[in-house]
Structure formats: C-alpha cells, structure tokens
Amino acid sequence: MSIYKLAAATAAAATLMVGGAGASPISLSYNGSAAGFRTVELEQVPVSVAGNLSEVSAGGFSMTDTSGGLGDFIAWCLDLGAFLGTSGANDYLATNSPFQNGGVNLMAAGMARVQAIFNASYDASVETDQDNSAGFQLALWEAVYDTDMDIATGAFQASSSFEVEAAAEAYLTAAMDYSGKNLWDLTYLESVAQSPELRRQNLVTASLSPVPLPASSVLMVVAIGGLGAVARKRRKKS
Image 1 (cartoon, rainbow, N blue to C red):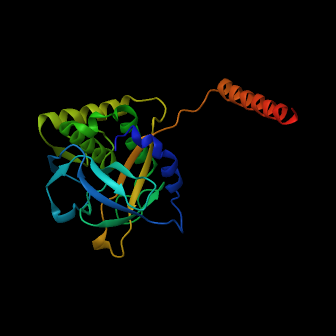
Image 2: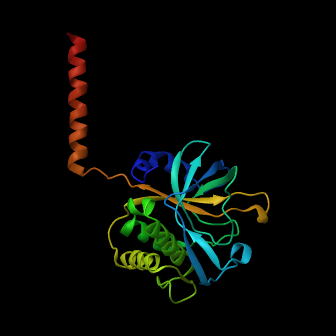
Image 3: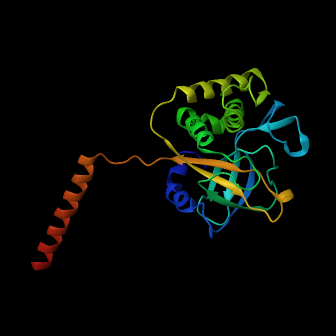
C-alpha cells in the first residue's frame, strides 16, 4: 500500500497505539521488499547484530496486518539485533514506548530523530526507488544507534554504494535542518515472542498526520450543522 493510502489507516493505527498492559497483539506477515534491497556494510554498531553479520540488506518491507487495523503497509527496521520473520505470521504490539523487549530502548531523543527523518523526507520515492529506500533505511539506523546523524563517524558507521550513501546523507541533513510540524504519525511495532531467541525485528511505519481544521473552519462546520438541524425541525413541523 502506498504511504498516501495509509492515511486512511491513521485512525486504526491510533487505536493500536496503546503501549500499555493488556494490549492485544497484532499479527504481521512479510510480503517482500517494497522497492528491492541494497547491500550495506556495517563497519561499527554499538549492539550485537543478529547472526554477527557485517553485511545486511537495507530497504523498506511490504507487510500485512492479518489481524486487521493496519492492513497492507510499508515498514522499516529499527532493530539490527534480530532477524525479520519472513515466513508465517509474527506477533507484534503497537507501542508509544519503543522498545522494551531486548531491542534498543528508543528514548525520546531517538524517537525525535526518527520523526525528523520522516518529517523532512518521506515521500513516494522511498517506496519505489531501490537506492532511496536503502538510503532511508540506513538513515533510520543512524538515528536509532547514534546521535551525530553521520554514517561515517560515531557509534554507528556503515557504507554502501555511492547512490545509497548519498541518499542517506541527504535524509540525515534534511532531518537536522527540519523545524516544522510533524507531518507523519509513526506507529512503532514491537516484536512479541515467547523467548528471546524468537524475537523479531522491531519496526516502524508511518501514515499521514490528519490536518487540523482552522478555528474559523470549525466554527463554520458547527454553524452549518446548526442550520441543518433547524431545517430538519422545520420540515418536521410542516
């Protein structure tokens, strides 16, 4: 599903964003890559990478919420410490406190960096272009595992093709310069597993934030609603 079609799922995602005890798991299935993957070399990562890999595939995932709510959507990995479940369905919880299951505990500052990347750069090209998709994923890993927003320095360092690196650097620079409102509602998806070795990658997905009506428009809607009620009463009397 396109990121623009996901706007229709915003209300459902908001309902899922409970992040508390008693929340019901949702069941997610992997459908393949969104735009195709590119290879990324992990040169320095401040966590234990799943399988002790130094080379990983980067890009958005096409997923389906088989339990409802989110439907078909594009997800992004925020967790190099686990593998993505690519067969069958895997249980997740939507949370506003990512992540408490053994993955990186994404504190407020990390969430702000992730949000800024989406706000500044998320568009259709990250779903349809391989280099942009991989660059966007690489930028997200930088935001999760480091604070300097530079893939060449700091606690997280990685390299790829010139095109992927250029895309990642552009997304990170745009995020640092962004000072506007939140354009995207982010849903963080935390893997639920019976044992640590069965844990899957923690993910994030985005839907367009609803645009609030100006106060004048709200008053106009209320006024129109009032006129409609008056008209209905008159029809009933007649």
